[in-house]
Length: 621
Image: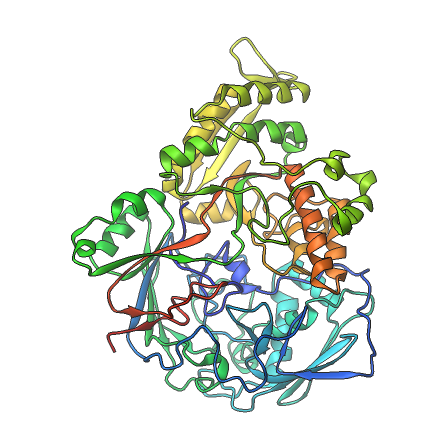
């Protein structure tokens, strides 16, 4: 699979670009609609902690010295240099306008930070938090030493300002839901801020949501008149360890470690932010990027192209040992990637049509012929999770949850064993799948004419596959050829990255290669990615939503134990897989990395991040 060159951790820790800049810019996603049950507990029993975990105890106790996976004695200095594909014209990832650069969220911090070996949050700008058992509100106590990069203090007033700015000028879907869930944010004094949660809304993840809000300088925004919903190259000061140092539009961006970073002695920051500079080189063509890597123009490359990984790393620097090639473990749930249907278009509303089109994608041939047999076929939205991926026949609590929506879903979801989407043969065009697909299309009213083209009421069935990355041609072309064999008027339209971004945001496409971010612990974010209220949101590329899925999401949000949460996710996984909102493609389950000698890393990579910009270091210092 073709990547974007710059990695991102589980929730954007010292991150880069993932599915989109918005996923990094809004790491906590948004609370679900009102109507869920309140957590049990005594509203008068106040809990105080150095972190917050939805389920179970915190891994790291109060007063921990450093994170387990870092090298606390990692040297400071040197440069991390990598690459990104495409263009950029903005440093503001919090707006739909413009195309934000890689690492544009990196200068900013939040009250709570996340780590790469635990699903909990720990104090960052805040040293502690207190909240009642019922989680009706949360108070954060901030570190008085926290400073923006311009030397001004980070205060509770900045936190309240940032929250309100997101509501006023951030993504509309975010603003609408957060306004309904967090109606009051109050700066009690310079170092104390209180978030009050609305009655009748689900409490799960609201503390993490509040603690994950990026913090901006109120003084800078008021002095400049800048807006969060505009594209801009001028940046507000952040409190993070890095600041934007220099840039050349569409060519490179360089971040510099702030020598006066206020948090360098915090336990959570030991062994992290080790490079003096982080440079990202931009390329319009992946081939040119690889040649630049071979020439040493940048020195770290996360590879996602199987052909390049299998045959491209035979240049002299590899032979001499100057370039290291490694496969490292990836404990993340693979992104739910596939060929996504735009369900906002009437022709894709019929499930029989979606299943027929899915049958024409041949994973086996694609993987063996084009990908050197290195990938695995993705079947689940929570692939490889031992308790979140649905398997076999539903039973126990999972079955009970599905029975609650039995009148809204296909009966076979309750009784059938979960299977692969389909199996294909070794030839590009699987004749058995072709016959099955044609039968489905005819059942849906699409019949072949004298030339074999499918039509209904005199209108041909057309499908345009929109892509921006030229390296995708070799994967999309065989699929469109198979669709043509079915009688679909299938075309592939490649546009430049700026136009692709615009058309993607405007839902101006039939099918794209895209996906859904899923994680090891689900909660309120599921509503934005899969809920019907936000089915036109950018986090939900297919535009799918249903009352049955909304109900299952509410059960996930209501869950008070991991077991209950997992049962709800498995039930949702079954429904999503049955509805075939995308054609599942492939996943890797590991990191392919190559880098020029001079980088150091921990012996054990934590499960939720590769961390090259975070906890790797330079051996050349």
